[in-house]
Image 1 (cartoon, rainbow over the protein chains, first blue to last red):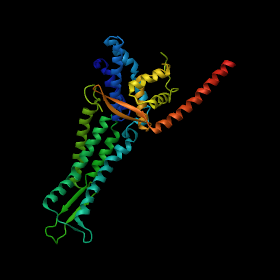
Image 2: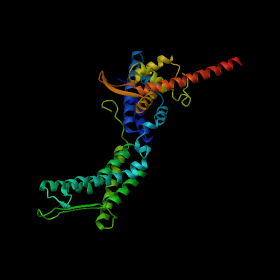
Image 3: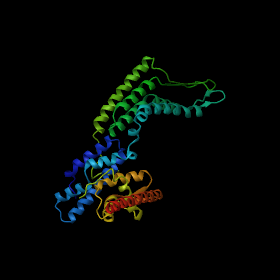
Image 4: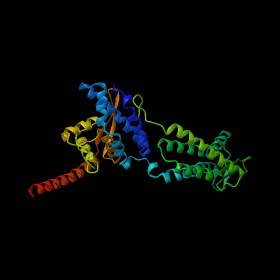
Length: 244
Length: 112
């Protein structure tokens, strides 16, 4: 078996340089995995030709090529770059708020289609379990969704070594725009009485909305710090695990 | 060992890769050996450079890859698609023209 410890610097610094250059993580993982396989084949070839373990390692590394040349070659391929690297303003700057608003309206649609009688604009009274489910869904859309989006953005930005400017701009905008979002359902108490569904967007002009802005910003800061600590040093695994 | 000249070599790895893979599907190490044999080891490139080229060609639809377990390892085999064959024809004719041009320039120098 080749001694991966001696070539560890090569295989551990390369992924970081590629990710920082904007190469998509899946390409980085595959390139590293294939290079490791290639290195193993070269090492085995060296050993078959009677080289010592140390010389076989050195020969294999020399034949794979200089790290700088390899990095330059990969970075010259625009098509291997991730979307976030190519369009950071769109993906990180506008993406979070567009996603949140889309999910917000999409979550209302089935509710309106299934439970509101079109002609009389009355709200059907569903079974209690369905009422609870719907209310839980709306709670998730209002309170949990921005946190899931924020966590995803922080994770992806850290994993890809992207600069934090646009993720931070996007998440601050999300916190401000999405915090006043409100959905309220008042179920009809009697069969002939109308219920009410109200959903609103607006400026954060209530104390509740302002508190939510700061709470969400706090979570964003927490996610960002944690993800930068955990994922900014992420290296696709060396031999022993399935790398792709 | 000769020094490689990346700007001048633009398109060469792509041409060599497509040419070899048009004959049969191969994995990276096998492909590099085939290129060495085919070129008489006259072109010096770091062997690792073949992978970004393979990924780029796959991304553009010129190649497709399949994973196969071989002796406890997963090999990624590459083969040329119809689009890749058309790309190979284009590249080959382009490089034929360059070759003729350089040859005639060299002949011109020789005859001067």
